[in-house]
Image (cartoon, rainbow, N blue to C red; front, side, top):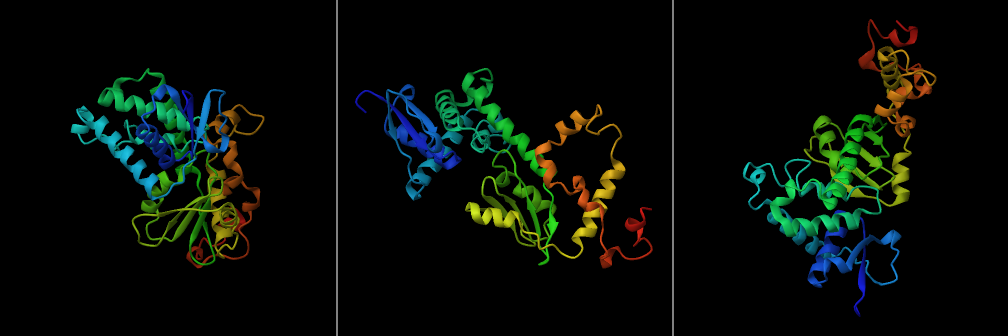
Length: 309
């Protein structure tokens, strides 16, 4: 490198970042002379040679797996939590699994933040679990916490609609790549159903077949992701069910949450406004149940929604 530093351009995915870290190790480049940057916004400094980005082929994926396994083993060896079968990877905040969460953040600093943390973890081993004030640990924890919070919001605010073919579809736009982390939650909750959870921002979908224990995670191109998110071929009962849900939500709502009232800021904090457009309970158009009453709701109370009783 002619005595200059290196800028490694990579994709901001777990595999892409770990592969770049592995390449830096194999090149025996001192950590102070290498910097990882997202290839989409790579801006070299005056003293830096740009290397990459590297294609995510079989060789680079194998290298990423090697770095992940080495990191897991190195951090776990001698760790008390490892002896208790709680680390690595079995808790969301473990020293290794939080690397995966951090890589899902929508932040251009992710590659370098993960790079510094992984270098420190290989150097310190299990002692990194107690280095909570180290700048590299603080930065990675911040990214992982952001993604964990967004995962919780995905579980709370994703709304599934019944489609005409009998399946269910939810379109959700999180501020991080959360679908791969929350797919298992929905597979457990909706095991008997066929459904798709699509994130058109990160072009990813979780597809579940009825009776399966897991979802398939599929990366999509932008056109297909947008087409899936825009599907509106709803089942005949969807309008009625949305109206019921809105009626229940309105009935449980607390007074004082209007835009000009004191509770509005609290409501917007716990239910961020960026999600409101996709929440059927906040869509005034869903107040009308329509003329069709699904068979399972027919009976003595079939007109309850229509007359407001």
